Image (cartoon, rainbow, N blue to C red; front, side, top):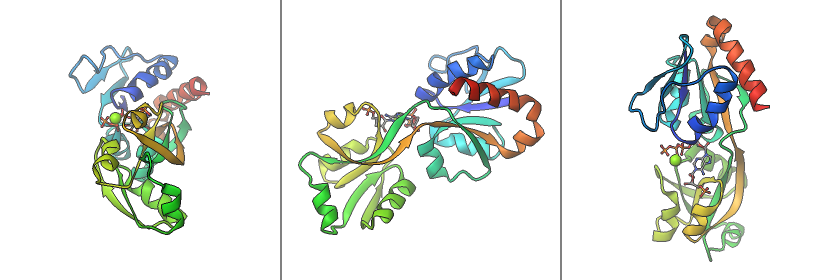
Length: 211
Ligand code: PRT
Ligand code: MG
């Protein structure tokens, strides 16, 4: 049995065409089903539905053989025990620094001010500001980072931006790009060796479809 870990929402939706290219189709829709283990048209393949941030953990421990996770999630996780063979070019967005309109970020940075930065991405933010030599107090949030500068919790946020609509709707402006983000296929290192016969054709089909 090959187990594929996916998260609901954009990762699942954008992985479906890649799975189809590999001849795999789930028999249920995670948006309407409450099941966390989804059968597929193939007896030897199943899909498990986990939180986006938990995908690397399931694959790392071999509870899933392969998974699809954002580069943002992988950077925070650290990637231990994972083979990361493929950029799937899906769920694309940018990791950015954003501030409230009117906050002069460049000037603050130039003057060596200490900034309060709210984010779910502590590792990414720590590395980014350390690289720039900017002193920051990081404030860990689990979501809705856009609110933090509006109510005085932080001077800036580090968050993902795709259309930019969320920033705009909340009077925020992106001031710095940290990285380009897309979803990656990850594989458990032991599965790759022990289940090569089943896993390799899947990787090949994904690679062809994502190219
Ligand atoms: O939502 P939940 O808390 O369950 O988990 P999650 O946010 O980790 O999962 P999900 O499904 O929202 O995101 C899964 C992956 O999709 C992320 O790990 C990213 O790699 C990728 N991705 C691509 C995005 C976005 N685009 C994106 N725009 N993830 C989140 N967003 C959020 C962003 O954080 C911000 O709040 O969408 C908002 C901004 O969107 P725009 O279009 O208004 O700019
Ligand atoms: Mg989300």
